[in-house]
Length: 343
Length: 209
Image (cartoon, rainbow over all chains, first blue to last red):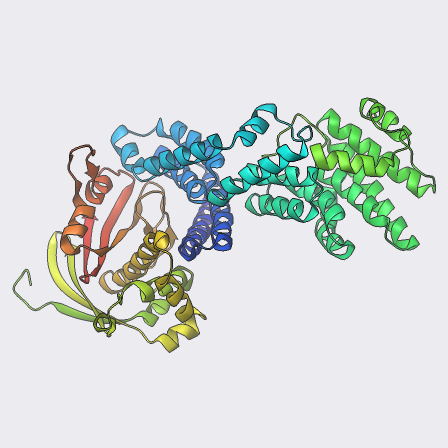
């Protein structure tokens, strides 16, 4: 058993090292695209670093510390100060088990870089009043178009310096979506996904946004990549997949349309069993009812929202609104649980 | 030179790195070496590129000359696009020079490992913590090489990297790599590999055990 675990450790570390070296090469190139690609590789390297050390059945305290340092460094170099700050917390915790002289030596390279990055990021964000306002208010939908435009400008400036900041790409997506800018919304969400492909919300949202922003063939290609694993996917992915199928069914032939509705129904069924919040459960129930109505050949109405427990939402919408459009647009903007943060 | 005898000369073709080390490590460093080592003057661009190297192992110092050369056509076959990549790096913006130096120093350290520690193969690289290049990743018993490069400054610049800088007006002391590595209880074996492009000199010193 131990040799197997050790192999996992070595393979993950070796892969992480190669990604870091490749990233360093891209940073040397220095173009915006190369730097973003470097950020993607460094985020992956950080995850592999953590996987490697987690695979050890026991590990010396000093190994935990060096691993945490390496992970944090990847996020600093990967221009993602919020993730670096989280990893810095791991560094501080791991440091407690290591004697001072050794821990100071281990931190001698990272500590000044982390401090400089944090300082630079703080300065960039502080110079962006709209971003600060969004951070404090927490919602984008209520902003006026001019405010959103200003926020997008500020965000673009911060992202030019810190292109690995996943949470800001997510914010950029939400602002572009609120402005109805499909191209930018898709690009920003894609960047967030590339940086953290393990984030289920990014994957889930990409399904819905693909159906909205991409031509049908490209959208189909995107959601087909998830179709095979939908029976193992989380509830949020199931929900967005189901609604993406309903959206794509509109432009499909009658046979194809029914296949898509059936897949929407199956995904909703799978998702409900795995829903871990009330918001998700209610939205999945609505998607389930929506698919049922479509399969029965009936025009779905806003009534399904009341039946699904989303009466409060339905009460604020026009009674004649298209329920599928209403539900998908609402989820695209805020997700199934408005209080939850994505990244 | 230090023991009164002529330095040992090691001729090394950069293409040989693809045999001595895993190509995944080597690939990224070739273009930076091509961009960094020759320098900008015509005279300095003539092969072989001779590095006067101080090799310290088990506290015994010997002088070695590493004559580095390469065949661009062969390298181009091994790493397609490497010539153009090197040109881009040479013409690159100054803000990125530190990365080019760093990558070139990695490549040259692979040369040093292959020539001065024959048989050792790189298995891992870490960048947030020393040593950078490892040939044994056993937890709490790491074995590897810490590396650094300087474009200019010669022995003085490399000694500063090794020994650090004392307190000066308004600036705190900066510990050198040697003292930092000496404090590491989790490192079983470590060498220091330092490179300067102008003049072309290097140090390969075993710090532990």
